[in-house]
View 1 (cartoon, one colour):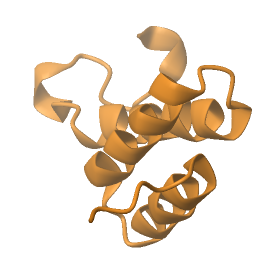
View 2: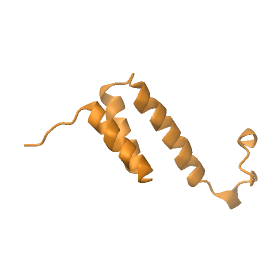
View 3: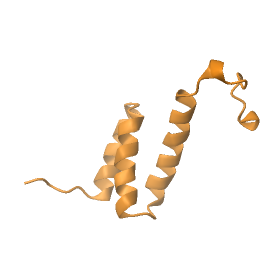
View 4: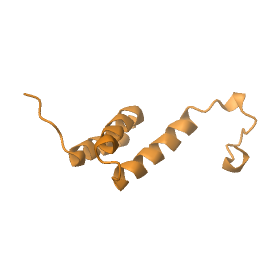
Length: 74
């Protein structure tokens, strides 16, 4: 029998994955939380932060004219 986890458990797992810098996996857990509870502010805030982190990690520095990563030039 598979035990269904609560949103608090998913949030703990997501935070642990963030500490391990496994951002993609953490985003998946956070999206599960938001599907069941769209107003979960902790999950929404952490998800937004992780999206920004992965956006900057995956940026092609040489394909952009904004080589200094100035957010105002985006």
